[in-house]
Amino acid sequence: MPDGMRAVYFMKEEKNRSNNIIFSIWDSADDYLTWKRTASFTPFSYFTGPLNNFHAASYHQVNG
Image: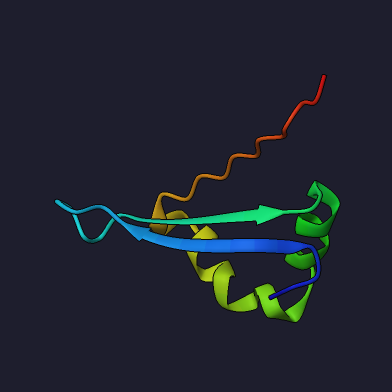
């Protein structure tokens, strides 16, 4: 796994098997952004194209 990645999950919708979710957990947003600029992200870049209805979302834990 890339530096800073804690876990990664690959999920498929039960009724529509062509819908996929890749869910990853990172130490920091910077670790994720750094990984996106490396060669190890290249295989995933296909999914970010317009043919795949790509969507990305980031969530951060707030302690307080």
